[in-house]
Amino acid sequence: MIFKDLNFVNGKCQLDYNYYVLSFSQIENEKVYECAVFNRAKLPVDLPSVKTEKIKNNKWVKIHLTKVDVEDMLNKFWAITGIKTPKQLDESEFYKDIF
Image (cartoon, rainbow, N blue to C red; front, side):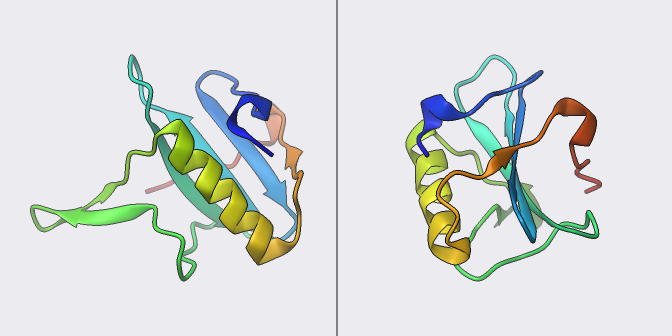
């Protein structure tokens, strides 16, 4: 899957990888994206080698991803899950980032 295959609805795109849901949110008026990973309990999870946050000024902040970074993340999830083309969730199915 490549970036142009993603279907953003109101600035969000969520992909179902069976056990994990990968969520991308576009930052308003910019060409960068934030990423979150959820499990089936709809809770955010941390996976080794999948960085979505960093420490800046002693606070955790979301990492801003470019289109190339998003494609790299899609390739990582393909390697982790074996799913090359995940199901894209409808807006009514979206998981909410509670943090």
